[in-house]
Amino acid sequence: MLAEADRQVAAEFRRQLEGVIPQFDLRVFGSRARGESGRYSDLDLFVLVPKITPGLRTTISEIAWRVGLDADVVVSTFVATYEQLESGALGASPLLHAIEDEGIPV
Image (cartoon, one colour):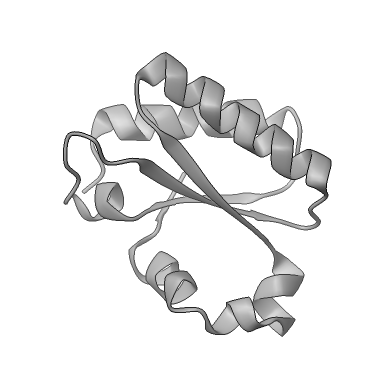
């Protein structure tokens, strides 16, 4: 179960990202989503976007850093496109299957 503090951090990340990307899917995954996090566990966020550019990837990382700094938590992002999931090797990734199984929509 996701702690309320983690839910708030993820919601703030979503709010800031909405100002940059009109359409995306956001899920919390990893130890915090499973309720198994330790004191120094990062908050893993999966961001699914229609299209990615190096500039957009940098912007997503900067938002994660700012939001995490304000909340005193490391926010890690894994960014993918719909095309990568549907036609690339990423679609068969064990990590992606874990995100599908345990990911919590934000």
